[in-house]
Picture 1: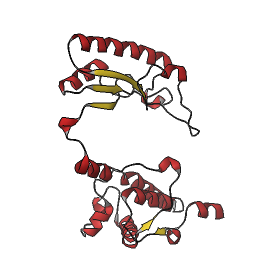
Picture 2 (picture 1 turned 90 degrees about the vertical axis):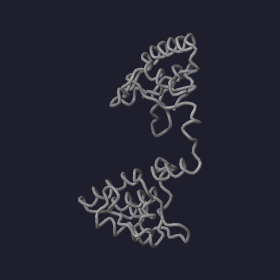
Picture 3 (picture 1 turned 30 degrees about the vertical axis):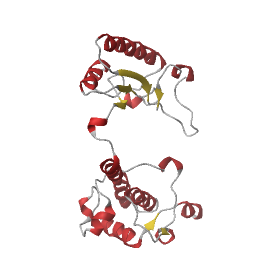
Picture 4 (picture 1 turned 180 degrees about the horizontal axis):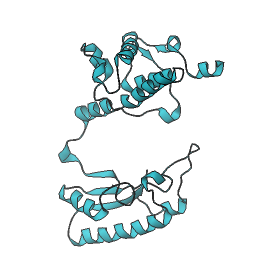
Length: 227
């Protein structure tokens, strides 16, 4: 119990700062830590809200500043509203999260960045993460390339899942080679038709906790991008 308490500080041990109230990402971490020692029923509520916090469209602290109810946020009821309000008012922040949970942008943060400094749609030159029907996407490569060319894109990257993610129909080394041949043929057709689009061959590869990938490194040498 002592080790667990040391890893997951309770409310009195949380870091209090004098600057801004916690962000949605920090609230998600606080909720996750509360869940570790809550009753079974409350665990589910805390964890559900923690997952949802990354998809809240506005910062919870902004709702508090505007005197709006936090129950506007997904999976926040009266009980969690009281808890989150307290964290915001006391400007409590969690300890630094484990490496796997660091440096993710929330939906609210992403929208704020795009609104303040993001490129306009007319300045977008391509899309570097696209899944096709080779894994868990619904469109084929040729149709996606034609649609991208119509939008004026200069490039797209086909980044289907690697074989370790079987739930998403991840592709193995043999399928990766076949996909490469298909992309080469599509690029030849695009050049012949005068369309200024290039299809890049890529993959979204699974990594284990030690950082090793689930594909043979030799199979990755010909790829343009590895995510």
